Length: 511
Ligand SMILES: NC(=O)C1=CN([C@@H]2O[C@H](COP(=O)(O)OP(=O)(O)OC[C@H]3O[C@@H](n4cnc5c(N)ncnc54)[C@H](OP(=O)(O)O)[C@@H]3O)[C@@H](O)[C@H]2O)[C@@H](O)CC1
Ligand SMILES: [K+]
Image (tube, rainbow, N blue to C red; front, side, top):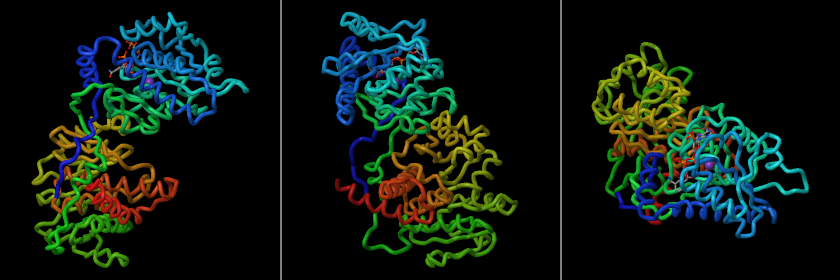
């Protein structure tokens, strides 16, 4: 049963945000959006300051563009509210730049009120500000160096600023986007070795952005607040797939049903030494609610004594006519596996391809399939599928997932921080669950099994991929929250935790 629910959570790329900004400015007039953005930053900083020692000073770092304008105006507002607020600019980051109109207006306003940003010329000056000698209190920092206008890697004092923030970890409010992060991709501009600010809190303007929800950004954004600034009409480029979305996809469970009503899953994998991979996928399919599960291993039957309901089957037997295939978990890479994959691809059955199946698929040229398959690559597998490098995948996770989805005509689940799900027709979502607890062997097998089990229950490839990813991520998040620690989750625990995550959606439907 499906229910209508609130509209999806939109994610807007920079071009869309700028289009909205221009349309809004035509109505509000110059400066209005910056006033609202600065007030939102000042409010957020004031709230954060309540958890800090009384008298904590505010130090705003202002870049040459409107991001700097937001921060400078916020600092002026905070000073009016009684804070010891001062503004600074970094010599090299401002060299030769002409401020855009809004920022120039705020700079003029600051000059008249005696708050012209002081220029920092050296690393020593920067350190003195961020790490003042006691008894001078440590500051609350506003990062207004760069926002959606960041055009190249941070360098010089801007880079040094990020390194010092990493070292000192001051309470820090990032304006719009943590400086150094690409608002479209979530990558650090310049790659993993380049610098980006690590925020306690990011206040982002007009709309949520994909680059705040995936990849390296997840270690930089901190808590995220979205401030629409009164701007409406956002047309999303993609969506954040949330618990509320997941609740609309939960397969129904009519009273008048039997095991035949909830589909069959055939897990193909678990070759010698890797039997556990297939068993994890099978257990997960079971916990997703699928009616019947078979495991077919190229090296003979693998039996799960703790889960005797999982049936075994010969890989040489004809595939069950209405089964959903989950293939690749511990399948191996030999000629037998290759032949098996060819049979699977020819079957036209709904399928989820993971791990070894993806590595073998990478060797085949893209071909059409009977029904849309789901591919679940991690970044290395995605690189193999697209003939590129992991660095290129991680530099634009959404772009990479969309490209593979299009060329392979499949729903692609690009795993990793901020899992991206892409459809061959060009739409995409980032899943709003999951975390580092999942960074351990076998969790991918569980994900493949969950998606396969949901697919077998009648969800489309797109729906099953989204719901499977959400349940998988939420299960791990809940476990980590319960333990207070994100390390030590074993893949074998995950299927039952995911079952709990799916069950919790019954309540979300009524919220
Ligand atoms: N749109 C909205 O929703 C609203 C936007 N608002 C705010 O405006 C922000 C966008 O402002 P923006 O367009 O002026 O860009 P911004 O990020 O300030 O940087 C551009 C400047 O930085 C420079 N520069 C770039 N990279 C550099 C580097 N590595 N190292 C050194 N310099 C570098 C670049 O120089 P150039 O590349 O031109 O040489 C240019 O001078 C947005 O994030 C939000 O905070 C709100 O006020 C209201 C609503
Ligand atoms: K910023």
